[in-house]
Image (cartoon, rainbow, N blue to C red; front, top):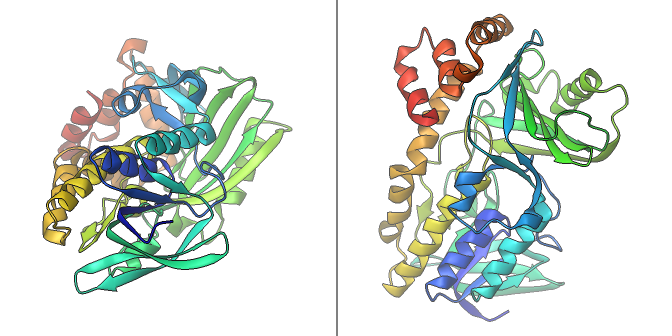
Length: 389
């Protein structure tokens, strides 16, 4: 490693690699530091993305795609199944290959990528954050930077060290558990989403097919609901419900911030992006595309701020303002819907499903589902119409 970089990005996930790539593409000297030995490992994700959002960020490569998804089914507590009418296409990714290629794209843009680089602290000066202390391959060293971008996940350590409040309430922190199974016999082009406040309190369950009989089967529950029964136990019950003998290939556990974006995501010399800034979709928990959208802006603003010789919090405000005016505003709308939806009882979910099934198949859209769910909350219907038009 060099003694100094214009930008140091901490965290080699999609947000980190994207921020690094866009900063480098505007002329900044960038280092990307990943604590694990290899980019893309371990995979802590359901691996689902929408085609439209992803295509706006990168040229989609066929080898990233485990399965192309053309349908979705919502399952009520009663077992009633509502097939969604939609022309949208999604993908279940090979996240390991996807993340690896994003880092490779960053490297091709001039980013220096370092794995097994564990950041142990921040360097601080009169102008704010001035670099990091990192242990790389057994050697501990201080590396200075004009600007640091923290893409180090939920409740970002770097953010805390810089004095930012990165906490997420237990109500908004989803506790997630997932397995990949090898003997799934459902429709390989359809994702399945399960709703029940009894089985998935404050969240939902999912089955994302990966082709060749494989599927990611998982769930998320609100952190405040995990004190009596943890996500692992809920998942075991879910697995027993969908398969007599699930052939489990892997297990993964983690947390997802399903909240509004943090109030403050920049300070002098430092920016937060991706899960570190709580930029995942609060309703679904999906954070790949939204994190990359935010990171693109963060990288661009970082390079421009360095060119202006000004990395103060005031100069960096361009990043949160751009986010709030675009995707961040949508995340606020999703959060309002989430707060209501996950208070619904199982009887309410069943009633909604029954009403939607009375509609013709082409009218079984997300907009109409939310209109039915929000019948007593007319102020939220407009949010749903805007989000799912």
